[in-house]
Structures are given as structure tokens and as C-alpha cells.
Image (tube, rainbow, N blue to C red):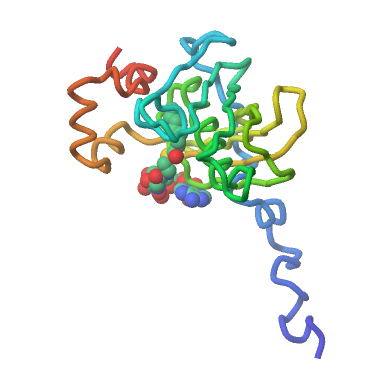
Amino acid sequence: MTDQDRHGASAHPHDDASAPRAEVFRGPTEPPEHAVAPERHPQAPEPGAWLGTHYDQCFGCGEQRPEGLHLRVAAGPGVSVTAEFKVAEAHQGAPGLIHGGLLSAAFDEVMGTVSWLLRVPAVTGRLETDFLKPVPVGRIVHLRAWCVGQAGRKFYHRAEARLDGPEGLLVAKAAALFVGVKLEHFVTHGRQEDVQAVLEDPQRYRSLRAFDVNP
Ligand SMILES: CCCCCCCC(=O)SCCNC(=O)CCNC(=O)[C@H](O)C(C)(C)COP(=O)(O)OP(=O)(O)OC[C@H]1O[C@@H](n2cnc3c(N)ncnc32)[C@H](O)[C@@H]1OP(=O)(O)O
């Protein structure tokens, strides 16, 4: 019995000639045909401006997290950002090498920060990472992230990580789908004592400022 016999007209369901092939083969992080080019908000920080930490307890950029990544993110041209962090002892997975999940966390943070240039609060829906080379402790990881398309509330981002600087060895790549949310998302779902602390001192959650909710 051939595959064709087992599955009917074609050997694989995706081989159905009547199916919209481009859509069938697209993954969730690939912008659909109807996606539009993202627009940098007119009041987005100028290219080169440091964006600073968005929340002092954030694992990615927070100043109050000694074991965190302490990413320093700067606005780039268009809808893009760059960032750097130094791989610390606490970031190890294998001896002397970064934990892969933490590299994904760095991608999550830097792609999340792209939202600042769009002025749309957004959360990660899906995040994919290609790990290309091992990353040793003590090295600087240089990250770049940019938006490649928007379809309604869905934002499609890309990012890359290089060793020691923007022209360094490419060690990892990422693609993500972020979904725009209302600020109520954070107020509703966050642990109430942390939400309350931020409401009492909004400076601790600078995203609020970035999104003009509490300028
Ligand atoms: C400055 C800030 C820096 C921050 C950096 C760090 C960023 C983060 O880590 S955020 C934390 C991690 N992410 C989360 O906690 C998000 C948890 N998930 C959620 O809250 C919800 O699933 C949420 C908000 C993403 C979507 O829920 P909801 O608002 O009900 O929208 P929903 O209708 O389900 O989805 C909207 C669209 O997105 C799509 N979508 C949602 N999730 C996914 C997914 N995982 N994969 C593919 N598509 C998805 C849906 O299919 C839908 O598409 P369409 O409009 O074409 O039908």
C-alpha cells in the first residue's frame, strides 16, 4: 500500500493542491500575507537613546535583580533596538556556558522592548530560538531586535545575538509573535502586592510612562 492509498489523493495532507499552500506552511511567527509594515511611533525615543529598565524587578533589565541579565537596551533605527549584557556566573547551564533558556529570556526581553518604539503594550505569545554556537561565561552578548510585520494585535519580531559586539560571531537567532494587550492585562493578572507597589510608585514601572498612561 502506498502513501497515496493510505491518505487518499495525496501522500501528505499538505500536498493537497487545493490548499492555500503559503498559509499552510507558515509558522505562527511568520507574518501573514496581509501583515503591514510596523510604524515607529512619532514620539518614540531617538535612535541611540537608552531606554532604561522598564521595571526594577524585571529579570531581563531590572536593577533590583542581582542575578538578572541587566540588559541595557537602546533605540535603533526604524522599529529596532539593540542591547548588551555580560554572561555572569549565575547564568551558567553547562560549566562555563550560558544556559539556553536565559539566552531565550534575553531575546524575549529585547524583542519585548521593541514595543516601546510602537507604543503598544504587548506580551510574548510565542518565542522560537535557534542556538547556533555555545556562549561562554564572561563574554558580552550583543543583541539586536526588530519588528518585521503587524497584523492587527499581532506583532512579528526577529532578533539575533552576536559575541562581543554588533559585528561579532552570530551565536543565536530568534523569532517571536507578540500580542498587543491593554494595560489592564498586567493589573488583572499580576500578583496583587506587586501591582499595588507599582501603582503607589509608578516610577518603578517605566513602561507606563513609555505608553503615555502615566506621563
Ligand atoms: C517593555 C516590556 C518588555 C517585556 C519583555 C518580556 C515580555 C514577556 O515575557 S511577556 C510574559 C510572557 N507572556 C505571557 O505571559 C503571555 C501569556 N498569554 C496571554 O496572556 C494570552 O494568551 C495573550 C494575551 C497572549 C493572548 O490572549 P488574548 O488577548 O485573549 O488574545 P487571543 O484572541 O487568544 O489571541 C490574539 C491573536 O494572537 C494569536 N495568538 C495568541 N497566542 C498565540 C501563540 N502562542 N501562538 C500563535 N498565535 C497566538 C491568536 O491566534 C489570535 O490570532 P487572531 O487574531 O488571528 O485570531
